Amino acid sequence: MSAPLRLSLLCLTLAATPLAAQQPDTSWKRQTPMVVKYGKWATLALAVGMGLKASAAHHDADRAFNLLSSYCLTDPTRCNQGPGGRYIDPVAEGYYQASVRSDRHARGWLLGGEGALLATAGLFVWELTRPKQPPKNIPFEPTVTVVGAVTQFGVRVAF
Image 1 (cartoon, rainbow, N blue to C red):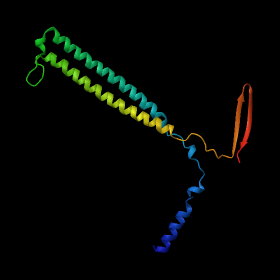
Image 2: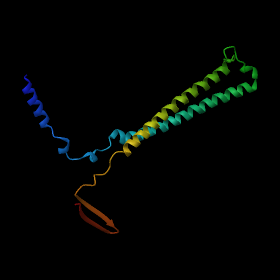
Image 3: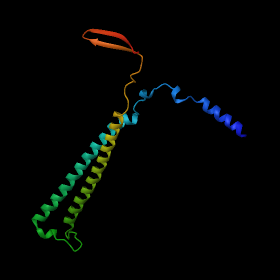
Image 4: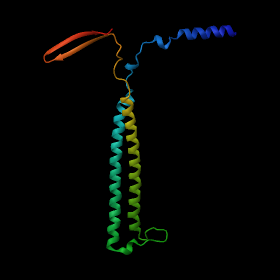
């Protein structure tokens, strides 16, 4: 293909697409995406649910540690530790490992809940920053007002 033919095809392509100034301003009509509109509530529910799971796991860890404490109070020799720091008594070690495991689960749920809460805040801010009203330069706009039992209909023309 020759250079003048390519240039003319390029000019025709550019001329066929309308310029941005030729398009009406409908940016205010863009609605908030459905993912944002309903996703913020879903992530909020997710954050609350993860917080509740973190609380339950924390209570499980406390319960296991309280069992270890009461087990050691009845006979302090049960809680002797070996050279590696592990409890010699397998029951005491089991209580301790259950406490550590539940604390680890609580930490994971809490971090997940904080992440979901951060996502929720981002979605709320995104929705709040979107334009929600038409621009003020609309020349013709009908108005309806209700005062008591009287409904008034009018037309406003801006110059």
